[in-house]
Length: 617
Image 1 (cartoon, rainbow, N blue to C red):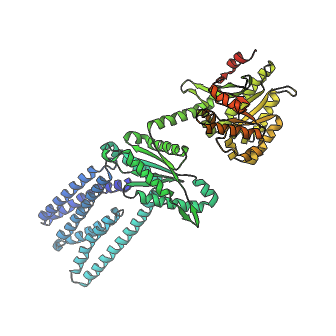
Image 2 (tube, rainbow, N blue to C red; image 1 turned 90 degrees about the vertical axis):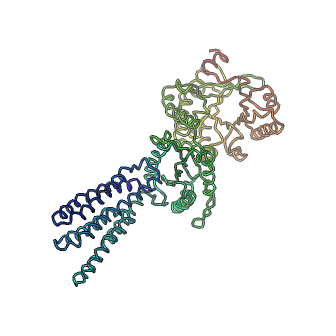
Image 3 (cartoon, one colour; image 1 turned 120 degrees about the vertical axis):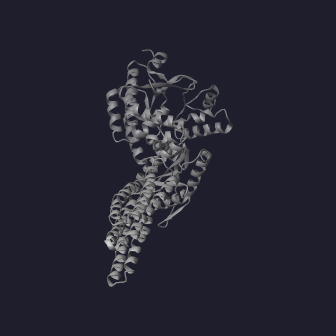
């Protein structure tokens, strides 16, 4: 598909050529009347009028935003016919009036022929298929005319005519090449040679009109390379650029003839199908195309002697006039692509309404979370912990959020969003202050617990300000010499995938303050025996997923007993969470688990409810 501006430019030349033909053509009518050659002049002008009317119809038929590629190509062919005919009319004028030497009209005919050639080289310079044949059509008969004079000056004029033809062709061709070069750079990505973002957006505007007019659909595919940044960082940008060029080349070959491929920037590519009828637009064909594209991208690359293996995440979206309006199609296919990333990469996700609603809720949570923290709308709840005799020994602080518009949100829904946006630092500080304030109040009232657990995020633990914050809070809430429960900071195993040296240094400094550490969700992440021997851990929490399966098979019971045995070998306190049945409790007690929590005992309670049920204040 040629750029829209190209067709718009050619359309404007139609009216210009009609004006430049009909108005000067009246001069020949006047000359024909004065010098008694009116009849051929009228015949010629009638032909010129007919060609001009044809040109007007071609002009009116044009609508770049309402025509398919095939229709635009058909319109372009009509425009070429018009241009050939309008300049053929001027050739006819030359042939008719060049014999009128008696009244010296032939000089006007010769000048008009040269003028028409200059006009053709100037106005049609953007299209080589037009200016080359038309210049030959105009200038060769003029050179032949000079030759047929059979005089010395006739031969010289014939040579000069051919020289002028060569100059016009040379100048027009150079200008054409420059236009095409600029046109190409305006449309294409410099690195990969694919279409660029600018052209892509113009293409989509035209496609939008076509989908709307003919009630068709199209498929759009957003491709993002997985872990491309790591290649740039480890092997350098030269290798990264060559990899992008190879990927782009594969995409272009795969999409050739049926789809338009563009590079949006970085390692993101977009592929768009042509407008499809209902019989061609089943979702399976779109998914099959995307699966084939994944296979093409996965094949190994050899760059500078490096054997590289990459994958991609692809968002797929079926376009229609409603989805494409207002630029929503970019957002929608982007949502699908990031969902593919979230589900493990190297795959594809088809955009649908359920996915859109989930992401819109995600955005709403992200927008409201900061204000909720600021206005203290995040509530701290406390879930009690018991020993094997079902005696209260401790509790874990948990958070809850209830919003008028969003309803009740679980931590599993909004904490990951806080992690991604960085609000987890603000949220963690708020929860830590609220929890320590509550613990201090309970201690002052004489209500003692053996332990108190607070969840700490990876970002908090790795923050340079976290140590100072904890020290300040402890100085504020716990006076020197006062007794208090053992305070556990619960961390997930994901922190072990970060900077281990910094994690260990931070944990040791916190232990000097009096903090103990518990590994939450033990056994589900990165844990290993080496971590237990290196990290200053005091407690492990058996994840609910293991507890849930205790009734399923003997293998699951063996898994629990193994986890407990490992923890005991390291002299760690053992907490089982998520206990919901008496049978689960029995198995855990038999395996000598120390502490228990879950709905079997009690759900998480608000501060007031916890105090009312377990304390006397």
